[in-house]
Length: 257
Image 1: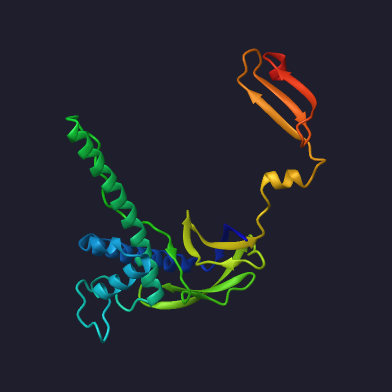
Image 2: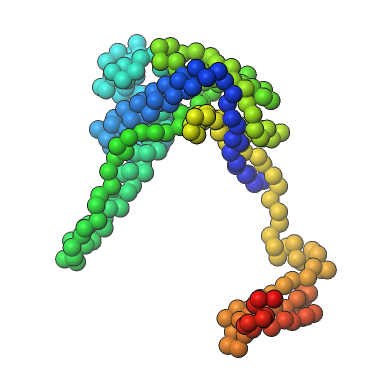
């Protein structure tokens, strides 16, 4: 079986005053993601872990619990009472950005060392961490529910508390029998959209050689390019290679048709 992933983009229809709630949710998401990026910078060894292990390590460093009352870098200095799934979505966003940044930094350092070894001047500037954060908030399970054909409930930050908000959805409908991923809250101008990745499985088609071999009546068009006297030679052949027709393409009218 093969898999295909696409993104379903739908417009969120809501009361005008709720735009500020979406903006507040996105701002909070980016603030938390930026915080975790700084945590990763202070503990680069986390990047040697898998995403699952890194998530556990970052939560231990930042999240206050009964068993962990004094984390090294408490998240409460940035935000309090965050839903667990919201926090984890921000952690994964920070991890993705950190892995990309440090991979580019490592590549830059390698280029610099090679230039120094050869005695060459190296003028390429190093990559820098994100100066501003403007990611779309990813909503894991627990941040949305009751998704129906034209509506769903979203858990958003109003600026003072978390609240469930019912929104209408317009646009392309979700395909049937598809695996739905975590949607993202996306701002486009003054409008807010919900982008949802969906994954659908389908039977992989057989290889071309097999398809041709099992359909002897198939005709093949073969094209040879960059020949000495012609731009191209096109032939129609049977599966066995018998040439049925040939066309030589030169210049001028042959190209213009």
